[in-house]
Amino acid sequence: MIFWMAILAGALFVWLAVRLGFYETWVLLFNIVVSIYVSVFLTPILAEFAPASGGASSYHTALCLIVLAGGCFALLQGLSFVFLTGQFHIPFPRVFDVVFSGMLGFVAGFLVLSFAALVLTTTPLASHKIVGVLGLGQQSQPANLVCITRCCDVIHFFAGSDDSGDTPRDALRRLLQVNTAHPDSRRKPPEANEPPVSGKGG
Image (cartoon, rainbow, N blue to C red; front, side):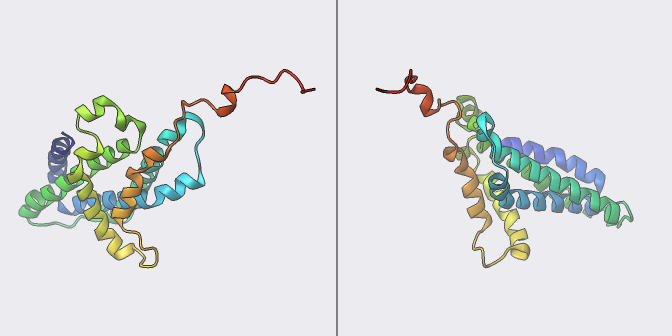
């Protein structure tokens, strides 16, 4: 079901892309892809640098994904408006503004909803029955994950380092396994089950 939801989101972005035009839509898609790439690769570092405590630890990875992606997109979109789209407009033939901008808009919408599904997958909510019924589980979104991986591969080709050896596929695999690594925050600490000590032993 998540695949068809992403298709619907892509269709909505097609309408937005046709209104924006090819030039503005290309900039929007580029900013979305870079933001997702940065979020996927830097989330483990941010999660380790700023660890969570208590019940929030189960949602820590999801929060890091949202903060990194949202912050990076806001920064890139602001810079793009100041130096690119807000300064000048590049006219293209009508076929570009309708057909090609629509295609780019569809990819952008598909990516946005796929990333939202990825964020949900890293939380304990992914194990709930209702999530499985709606088709939002990890097993129900292979096409969405492939789309994220392929788009991140393009950025990684230019910005990635051969020394690290990490690929977008490896980074996504770590994120998808993070919900099994979180301890159960509802579990009582060991000392809570121990009988209280009344005094020193004789």
